[in-house]
Length: 124
Image (cartoon, rainbow, N blue to C red; front, side, top):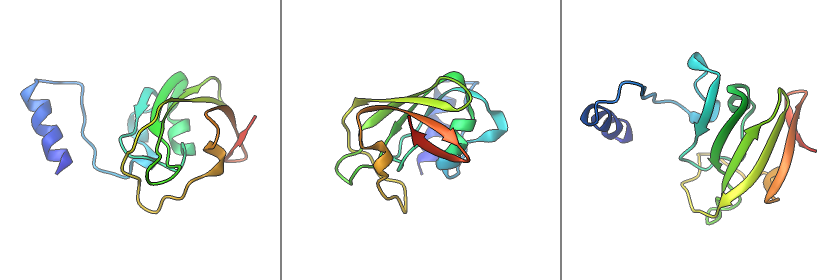
């Protein structure tokens, strides 16, 4: 499994600041939040409220976004305050898409800002 390969690499390189967690990454890992950075290696339909809430102000997140199965560009998200997120495409890519994902039109632009209001993101 990917987790067993990761565990072997952690041992091989004597890394002490790594924890391997097997879970649905869409919801992050709130036990040790807030984070300075979050990286997703699977395309998501968009950044989740859970991931946003686990980011420190000023934190960055790199997430491939599911636009179509052959179009999952990598976005850089930056949390600028308690409710605002800036987003910009860093590169085109093709990533595996998370199960049950449908493209979200909110992420159709290449550069935009989002605000979290009433538990949902809206473009500003």
